[in-house]
Image (cartoon, rainbow, N blue to C red; front, top):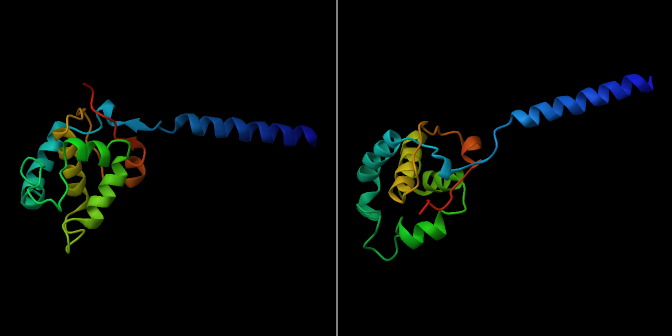
Length: 143
């Protein structure tokens, strides 16, 4: 009996180890987690939905509205996950008509903001899957 339990326990431990080994490791934006095409779609969506308040160059002329570049980007985006920024924007923008856009459009806007701030693009588009986005850390762009 003890032998069977030990073998079952070993199988469980080994099986768990295999499952853990197959999970994707958390990523960083330095790996290029979105495409240029996605960021271009985001630029068009940003122009249509965000630029009136946040400025065409992601710098608002209104002191009450945050910039999306330079120090504001560094302190508001770097070190957070893409999910954190995506969910915040989706839940609060545009003011008084939150969640106005489809999730993928919000995510495309996020990729545009990342690309504008010199975050490198890659060869696969991001999908609006919060569980995956939670694994992608926004890191400072390479110099």
